[in-house]
Image (cartoon, rainbow, N blue to C red; front, side):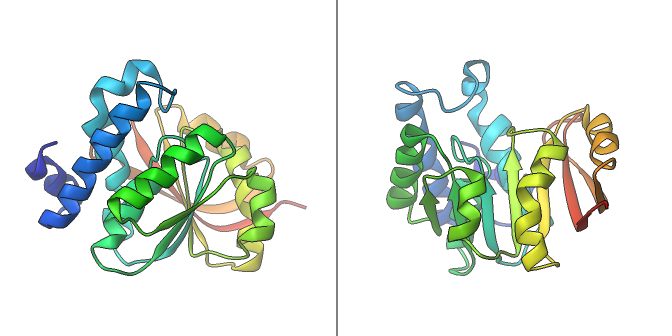
Length: 211
C-alpha cells in the first residue's frame, strides 16, 4: 500500500499507526479472500485503489467523528476502513451490519486485529433497526439501488432526522436518483470520486416518504 497515495486521497497526513492498521487489514483481507468471496473476483487485484482508498475518501467528506451504521458491510468497505480511520482520533464508532456469517466472522477478525472502532451485527438490515436505535450517519457500498437503500435507511432517519446517508455509486446514479424520487423526498449532494472519474458518493439529507 502506498502511504502518499492515501494521504493525497484524504487530503491530510496519515499517522504511522493508522497506515499500519490499514496495511494489516489489507494482508488479512487477502488471506480471507482466498477462502471466501469478499468482493468481486475481478476487483481483488486492485485492493488499494478500488476498495481501500475508495472507502477512505468518505472520511474526507465527513471529517468529524460520528456514530455510523454501515449497511451490508461485506468485505469491510467502507465500514472497516471508516472504523480504522476513527481509531486515529479515538472517537466515533461504526456498527457494521452483515447477514452473511462468514463475512461477519471476517469483519470481527478485522476489527479485533486492527484495533478499529466498530462492532459487527450478524443480522438482516431490517432486524438491525431494533438493535441500533439511532445514528449520525449511514453508509453503504455496492449493496443495492438508491430506492432500496433509502428504504433501509428511513427507520433511522425517522428517529434522528439529521442523520446523513452516504452511498457510493457509479455512472448510472442519475437513473437511480430519478427512480428514488418517485417514493422519497430528499436533498442530494453529489461528491465526485477522487479515485474513479465515473464514480460518486451521494450524500442524502432531509429524507422523508412521499405520501
